[in-house]
Image 1 (cartoon, one colour):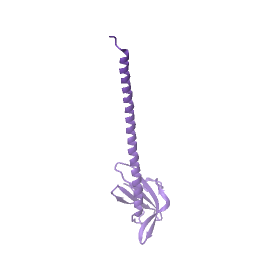
Image 2 (tube, helix red, strand yellow):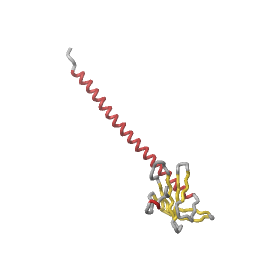
Image 3 (tube, rainbow, N blue to C red):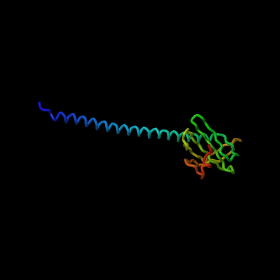
Image 4 (cartoon, rainbow, N blue to C red):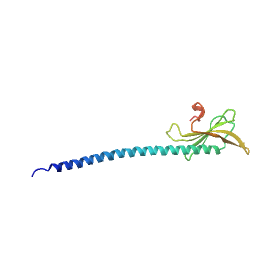
Amino acid sequence: MPANPQRGSTVLMAMLMLVIGMLILSGLQRQLEAQMLQDRDEQRALEDFNLASSALKWGLTLEWRIDDDGWQCQSAGVDALRACLRLNAGGRIGLLRGERLVTGVARPAAFYYRVVPALVNERPIIQPIAGGWLDVCPVAGAQNCGPAE
């Protein structure tokens, strides 16, 4: 009985379709993994943004020494939040920094308020200047933008 050439080409075509399908699935798997990494990084960035914003707002509620022109910092251990204040030499204006401290990250997410000190009912407080919210340090020099670690 002669061999059927069509039968061999059918098997070859089926094998070819299986190989193409596996290549497509492999490519889709790589795309999915890359998207999952990107989503995780984006989620972490949003979390850092929100916690740094929380630290900044929390810093406005704290009591600060308004006669000190160096960096003063207070921390909340729950989410590694830290708020730091530095008043200028005259004590008329200051810079409040809110940040989320992350282990192993050289530059934590940080935001700034320009603030003015005030006394309310004999209690020293700081008040943000209108339009004073910043996501970059407004002064030159790294030593002026945050406390030394």
